[in-house]
Length: 160
Ligand code: HEC
Image (cartoon, rainbow, N blue to C red; front, side, top):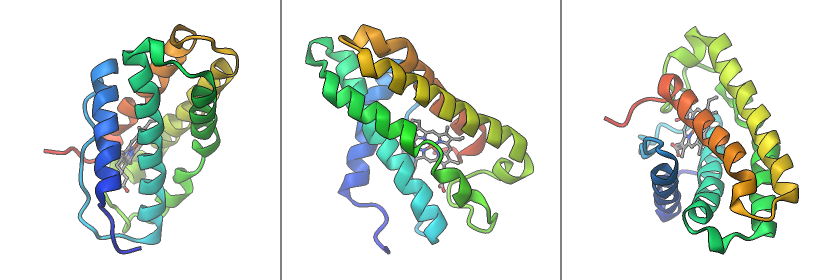
């Protein structure tokens, strides 16, 4: 519970950085102060796992001959399934973590970003089910990456 930033999270951050290079995302690389509550923990755990999943697919995007249909199906399905998970863990504004105030002051905007994320991950997962190459999922994959980035722009505290 108490240990927040292990090597595992470093690894996932590295994965995201690779993906960021592939997609032109700005890197997601904040380390949290460990003012952790169970809610913060739960939503950050989800996000880290998303980062790992995106990293796996991002690596394939960079090296298309490593495309593995089963892995892509699994990672995309995981994102779609988990995409509704974190949002209920943003109820208490005292549990700010690395969220910005906008999560609460612009709750509709945040909800819209979360809804869009659920939509684009469902599309990615649908595309992944029949994909035979990275090209088949690239457009949907880019949409998901754009969704991460778009939400982080307003609703996640900056690294600097
Ligand atoms: C609807 C908004 C939203 C979407 C969509 C979103 N995030 Fe986040 N993300 C956040 C917020 C807010 C935080 C800060 C959470 C906190 O510190 O409690 C965060 C934090 C993170 C973190 C840091 C976790 C940690 O341990 O501190 C990572 C990594 C991350 N997001 C990756 C992703 C990836 C990858 C995607 C897309 C696949 C994504 N996020 C989609 C809002 C979003």
